[in-house]
Amino acid sequence: MTERSTPPPPVLACACANLRRAARAVTQLYDDALRDTGLRSTQFILLETLRLKSEMTQGQLGQVQVIDSTTLTRTLGGLRARGWIRSRPGEDRREKYWSLTPAGRKKARETLPAWEGVQARVRARFGSKRLATMFDDLAAIVAATSPVD
Picture 1 (cartoon, rainbow, N blue to C red):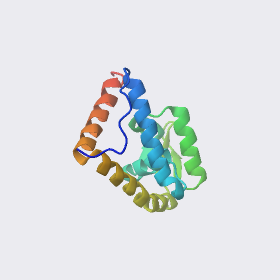
Picture 2 (picture 1 turned 120 degrees about the vertical axis):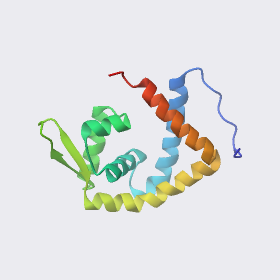
Picture 3 (picture 1 turned 90 degrees about the vertical axis):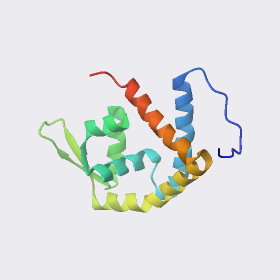
Picture 4 (picture 1 turned 30 degrees about the vertical axis):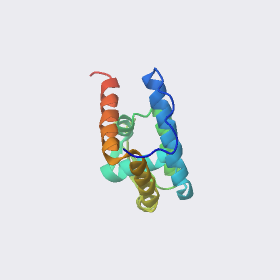
């Protein structure tokens, strides 16, 4: 088990409270690590998702990231304004497909070392096996809380 520098906070009786507290702590860690890149973790995650998938509809991005439409629209708008992503209309007027621009690919590449550094820090402090288990557990939580079709 990995050593801790501070004792863990008390466990709360609510899944939501525990997950939100953990999400805020992790987001702050990643945002601090990415600060010099000019990106927030939420922006980098969208750039990386588009880099890995090439092109996705706004609806697909929202589903994959479990982001509400308003927040996603605002974040995508900021990335587009900086020239890192572009959209094209789909068959349906309401549908937009998003992809990286060459500048967006460059920005993602430039940001990757900072992201990898914080990933390594988290892995070292938490342990690779525990981290992999946590990833699986979190994916299972998302699936368990998703609406049934």
